[in-house]
Image 1 (spheres, rainbow, N blue to C red):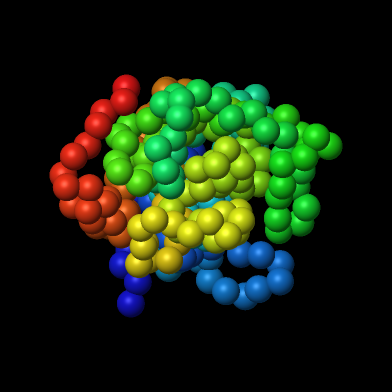
Image 2 (cartoon, rainbow, N blue to C red):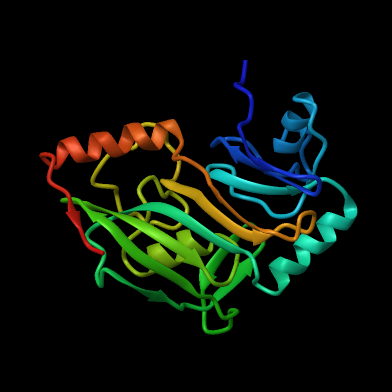
Length: 228
């Protein structure tokens, strides 16, 4: 039996929950598989989707309680007035320690690739800690293209640990037993259309990421190098 989905924030207009990995954010038209809204409905919470995370990505997902709130939140997304911050673990020692990836992305159905014909795409990254073979990153999405973080990191030469879709045959130096990408929707900041107040929500790392990060630290002899 699946554990209840944690609620991180709620008011009369919006709800933010912590999605576990392996669960669809929204049910697709070609499947009857249960998705996050279905699980929340079983918990007595009726919500309307506003955005989504990849199946294998954990973390904060924002929902609206009604159509008016959904419209207001979608406008925030269009105006880029909602800040999304991610946590990621990348392969290798990311250099420079902070910067911007600006590779244009061409979306092709369920896949994406870097292409001069693609749309402008911007990802900002900051190193949190560097290990022997991996780098812990804080990532801010400026644009929101399909698989943007995963594709940008791989194209820069630092595919995320657990990446299979865009790693281009590069084997991870460490094994992630959960067999999903080490990416987590960490923080959301927005103005709620219900209260008109600024909201900042943080989703704690999922248990599998906490366990894996401990393994990486132990394998590195306990040495951690802050790069802020």
